[in-house]
Image (cartoon, rainbow, N blue to C red; front, side, top):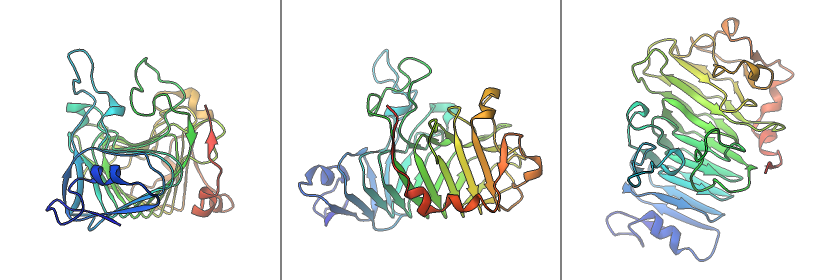
Length: 318
């Protein structure tokens, strides 16, 4: 085990320096309490990073999409991350990962965690940001505007891997969980931030691929907020085959009665898969849901257990 500590009591003061030192895998890096103001890039498999305390072991940075990298080029969404994970079999425990750039209305998108790979796991972590907090790669097959995907996996193969978020707190505003992976959220709190507008945001913006069996699955999660009632959507389709399913979740009063938004894409009504089962709370109003949102039957619900989702084979799309 490698120990990292800001006070010099470990082998390294920087998490990235500890990662760069690894010669033999698997390995565990233990991070003591402290604020680590650095950008972290993980590209080695079979690595675990474990914090001492999720409230007080904090990785933070403040890059954002509207930031100028030079006189002519903005950083863009996918180069704004605080933590990049581009590998398989990675685990992060008991940490806060934050992008502190601020509200999207002022700085644009600002990713906290950029996670792409198979069998990536975040456990008992706090993932904090505003717009586009958590990106669960891969990217969609093609960008809508030239240069829109500039970043670390722009030219990488599109492989639909599996990701797990367990006992995590994730907060943001617009599209704060987005991407194409198969991702299972178990006993997490998804907290929507009030940005003072009539529509305060969208929790998810999935970009699932055609033929992908699972997209986002939320099981026993809590959707909370400091927003006024009926001002937040559960999701909208970044791409037209978006898949998002909620099972046994609590939905606060901030959730709009329609539940999901179609992003003004009526053609997507035939291809998206937005579904709920046995949810509760004032934001759960199945009789008022949009026409393209379905309620799972008791026969369908068992298809969304963690064991079944985790057993799917990663899908090569490009």
